[in-house]
Length: 113
Length: 114
Image (tube, rainbow over all chains, first blue to last red):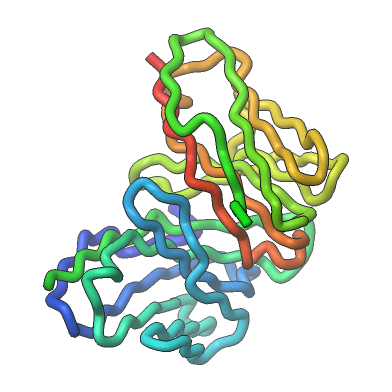
């Protein structure tokens, strides 16, 4: 079983829709939670990171972490065609020698005009 | 600033050939990383360098070697390429290991081993 599971998609939504992307994890040591966006044939770019349970908002993007359920989400409001990309969740312990990012396999999102 | 640059962008190798993937960053970051990305597998860490002069194995180091040439450059070497090493390789950097959550990625090298 993978430490991080991510809904594989692909997900296709109309422009303006609210998008929900999700990951679950099994390792209780994970304390940092990140979302990366990867356009086709490009490198991933960091969208948001958080290390606390609850919500963190940045413009149209909201990251939500529920440590009790080991579940994280990324919400995209008023989705745009430019949001079409693969979204990767990633996690890391807070400290220690095992500090590495563990990535989900990614969800491919298409926002239709 | 160019950020993180990688060369080459594409490469085709025959089984048993060797090659070095180059990575450089101009953000004065201390920590650098090499990942491979395969369909359905996400990104997996091959090696990392917490600071100049140090390197450590990641999740999938077998068949690879690395060199932290200086603070800016971190290379990945395949000594004897195998078809299982067909993948997209990404280099990344972060200011420190403590800021591992804020990594900046290069554009990737697409490697095919036949």
